[in-house]
Image 1 (cartoon, protein in one colour):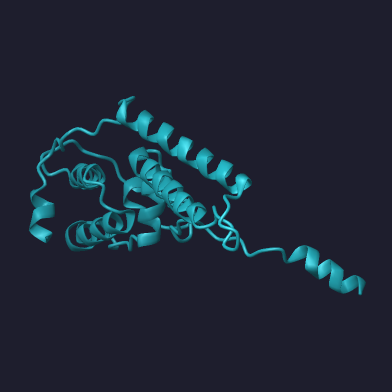
Image 2 (tube, rainbow, N blue to C red):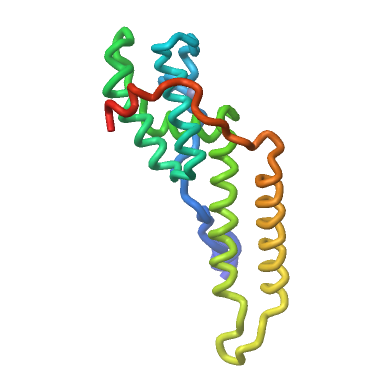
Length: 180
Ligand SMILES: [Zn+2]
């Protein structure tokens, strides 16, 4: 009986993400990362600078993280990889980690937080009412309102600027257009 009780205490729930961005190791941890290993040159044919501009443009268009990762992966493979010695593989996992955690593209992290909050709010909405009596469950309602307040503060903060403004791409994107 004691063993059963212990098991019941341990397995309470299976934790899961509200918004699954897959595994989240740091990009440079044992994996090649083009953004980490090379620098911008500032030249007109600056591959790195153009690629970063593409990321910022896509973020400004509020493209999803997987869409941006796929685009970076494709441009790297088709245009940049062949110009580097040993042609190192830049995995989508490494690209995703850099985009989210390097703090270079904080707007992408902000977008992820926004999506997490949206998911939480949608799910909380589904638990607000007692299905039998139709009454509002006060505890759930308070948590729901708390999430909405947080979401609104986030939106207000991001719309009031504060460094969140994303300018037009500075460099030409010819190399990216050539791929699309
Ligand atoms: Zn990196």
